[in-house]
Structures are given as structure tokens and as C-alpha cells.
Image 1 (cartoon, one colour):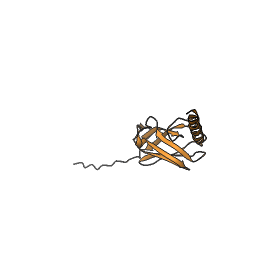
Image 2 (spheres, helix red, strand yellow):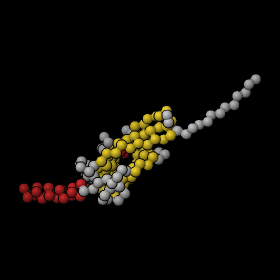
Image 3 (tube, one colour):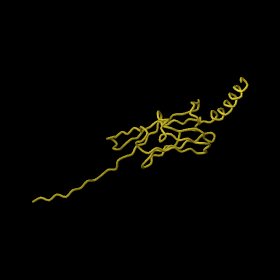
Length: 137
């Protein structure tokens, strides 16, 4: 029984070791699209793990799993998964912000290389010219 437990622990340590060796290179590229916010993450090795919104790891729409992806892209529709929305008067527009976690263990265990990124997008409102006709009698 002891030998079996040691063998299982050795297997788990060997399999976890590969996840821990991976890490995020630089800062993810943020893409502020018309209907969603996306990030492109580059890692030192093909990414195997999860990307999710902070505090929403168990919500399926707010989490995406990856298995040995060379390039990793994660997107969220605007206003979902607790994304903060803030209207600005100067400059006029809308700001969206959310914190995203890049987790390197596929089972969700926290590793030393996991990273959190606060993602912000600002959408400037276009200047509008309003005209109206007036008739005086």
C-alpha cells in the first residue's frame, strides 16, 4: 500500500512539473472589439490550463480550458462575467474593465506561475452634430 501511494505521488509530481515550467511571456495583447474584449497570451511552452475571470472560475461562460495551444486567445462579450462598465464625461465614452487569471494547471490548482491581468478597454463616443429646422411665422 505504501509503495502504491509513493508511486502515485511520484507520477503526480512528474505530471505537475511540466505545468509549473511554463510561464507567460511579456504582457498579453488586448483587443478591444466592437462586441467583446479579447486577450492574446504568449507562453514559453504550448499552453495547457485555464483562463477565467477572477472570482468566476466555476462559471462555464467565464472560463475556457486549453490543451497544448501554441497561441492562446480568450474573449468575453462586453458586459458579461461581472465586467465593470463606467461612463466617462471627458473624454466622452465607455470604459470596460475586468481581471483575468491565466492558470497553468488543467485541474485548477494554483501554481507559482499563474498570473492575473487587469484588462481595460475604452470606447470613445463619436461627436454628433444635431441639426433641426425652425420655422418662424
